[in-house]
Length: 116
Image (cartoon, rainbow, N blue to C red):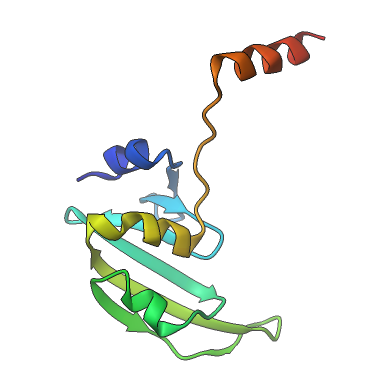
């Protein structure tokens, strides 16, 4: 699966990171694809229980929980080869927002507000 198909399937936004790689950003971390496999990466994110990360499947690496520059607890996490069945849980763990889909009535209402 490619990142474009994945993003369309789950209504997610794709952005380019500083290395010009395509990622799906979230508030806690981001998702990306490498060799057709789904990966999750969190850098200096708030710690979560290890069992929640393990529930995503794949090869898990957990960093130490330490204090970040602001004095808050932070942890690094990387999960390789997450099964697609656990993709929705991975989206929730990185706190990625889905695109909003408006109904035709809502769309007309928004367009009418813009015209005023």
